[in-house]
Length: 301
Image 1 (tube, rainbow, N blue to C red):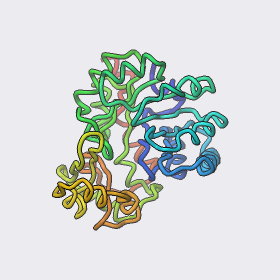
Image 2: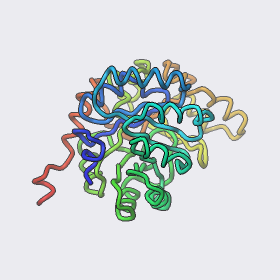
Image 3: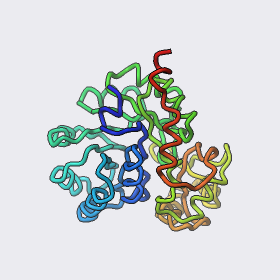
Image 4: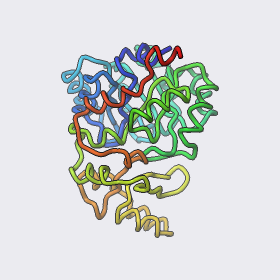
């Protein structure tokens, strides 16, 4: 099934849920442009989530998504809101959605987990996931160990549900490549960091624009590996061998980045930052990315 048919959207472009960043104004703008905007809930309470859903529904009549990062301590508070006020799509990350997947499906919500491996993709398909996002290590924020180029085709071969490619995709060429690998759509985060509607400090956006192909680094180990832009803080984190010092330096650093603190912030972004050159409306970003989607004629020949 084509992703556009599954999600009832015009363009198979999904705005990745950037933690603490993907707020209702950006979500509504992406969905109004024909893609799928996705709300972050990493800093949400049940009351804030209700308020955000109301704001999105006032901003757009088109489908949108909500992301649940399953390591959040208040998932049990957020789920009742989503069951009482069903949304078109819930994306899950950093955990297993099995305990509540059927409940969401029963109220008409599609469930799409973000996965880092073929093994987990198969598991999600087996428990009834609507689709999966195969995310390579080129992405920003918390990352796995496989690249988009190798992960996406293997996942597409392994499961029968739609596969959405993510990680390092920020241009129409990247979108075209994702479809060539077997994806039916793309999830994009870094390109939307510089959208006019994205609520981060201007110097965060400028750091993305100024980044080159070697402009990101990975700090941390194991499940705590994080890709972000090179800054004075990442230099300190890379030089730190004491875990307590590392945690002290990194704690709260994303919020400091969002506020524009270059010295002490972790400016999460993917390797596609080297291809991002300007601030523009979310609609223009969606339109440009969609130019990489194969046409029917291209698919035939």
